Image (cartoon, rainbow, N blue to C red; front, side):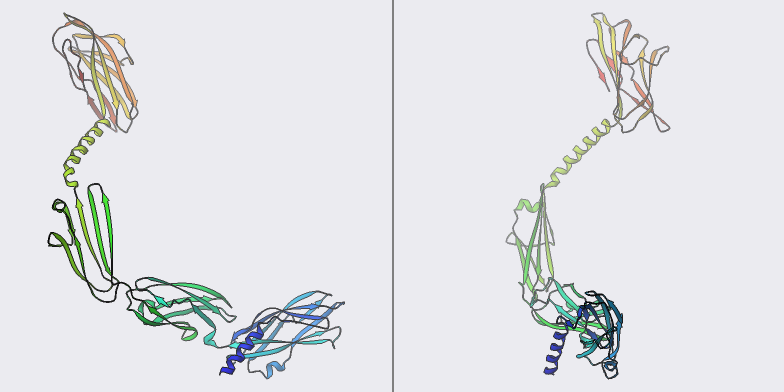
Length: 476
């Protein structure tokens, strides 16, 4: 058996040695070859023939029929092309395909001759030997994993495995099987290898809480039920500390959250304890999950962890409750101001122009309208009323009224503004004079703005103004 292994190694070594033969003006080189084949497969040789003569010549390339008649390995030999015409110094390639028998014994070296004959000079004949090797079916793929000697539990293992296809055939959808006493290492996968391909693959294994010790692992590549490649190896699972503790603390304004996690990463059940001290004031604002026991004013949690188990303690101290009422009030005020700022408003103000001890004789009225909404106001109209005891002069500031209507008790001034864009404002001023000097208190009606919101008419009014001598009044 040992002699057979040595013979096989020598045969394979000879096959891959550089092949260059040159004699009597003819040189034959081996350009490329696939020589390791499974029984029933084909070996392929690519040869380069060079005419080293000084004259043009035509060569016939064939093999001996006896090589097939008396061989228990070879089934057929095909040469293409079988004839080459070469000028002096010219080179051309040819392919030799060797089919092996299905019954060929594995681990067998085979050889055969290639004859090169000159047509112009038939006695000019040269013979060359070529060799190959029939490999065992179960060894057609070499599996070489980078398996570590030691593996830690509860960690991810990335196992790199190199695959070498030794034959000149596509190995399509072969089943790859990982087997071990460690359940986390049992895996099944499919793989396809091209002819003579070498490829590195990575496989991820998520390891759990494995007991320390020595374990074995096997890797098999199967075509159906037939084993085509295999590997056997061993590794050691190391010990880790029994328990790990992790603290995550999140601090924010007037709030602190602390999460303590204990995990049993060992291989046996473990009794654990967590202790904490808080002031009496802090305890009033602190919530716990789960609830602790109290021992000598300390907070205590006691629990048992099985291998791989975790236990979380959450402590939340929150001083924000005293601010909630104030925040509600602030939010309400801000919302109210925001609503006012985003509304359509109109203000009316009065300014005295002429006033004597007998009373007021001349006034200036200012109307200030603002579109605080986010939409365009259509068909906008501003209307102001003044009592009949005063009448408008013809002095208008920024905009003359579209219409002035006089009634029995009041005068109506109308401004048709039309469209007003969001955040746009209008300021209207005009002067009025009293028919009689105003000595007592006067109530001026509110001004109004009318606009269309869709198909709905909306009216917004200012406050009425109370006019007293010697006093300036503003109404909104």
